[in-house]
Length: 181
Ligand code: HEC
Image (tube, rainbow, N blue to C red):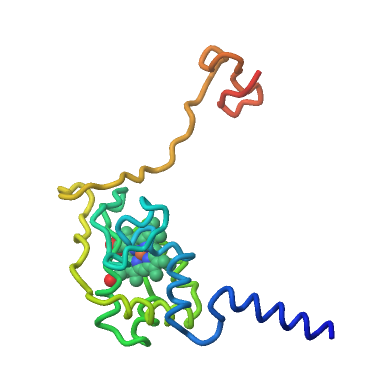
């Protein structure tokens, strides 16, 4: 009896998310959302608080990401998928190598079933549309709006208490950072 109830609970849990195992369109949609793909590859998604405009879903983004690597644009994944078979798409994602901030390692880590589900979902999205703007090498002119992703900064160092704010001292331990008195 107990096992029966456990099985029911397991079945309910599986219903809430598309079942692992067989690749499916529903699972592809689910992965594209929790995998964060729309955050960058779907225009207006983040700004709208997570609404997928069907006309723009995974069609790429003309907002650039600029850093030491140059300026990159989230690609139109409909175009990526349209020229490939499901197996071709899976092996492309397995060996994916891209510029930042594309989290290529997360995509490579997906199971083949997840990669295939993404393909099935993307292929339902209709008209492939235009390519996202081309990558711009460092120092070249950028023709679109872009976000600057600068290398991390550290708080300014101190050598004496006078360098720090009110109620702070320069770390007597010698870390060169201000700390609360
Ligand atoms: C932080 C933003 C960001 C997120 C999140 C993101 N991407 Fe990307 N993606 C990019 C950028 C930028 C590029 C272009 C990189 C380049 O020019 O090399 C890209 C490129 C790609 C490419 C290469 C396309 C091609 O035609 O060569 C694939 C495939 C891809 N992304 C899939 C995904 C998938 C699947 C997800 C979700 C699991 C995802 N991306 C999440 C920003 C992102």
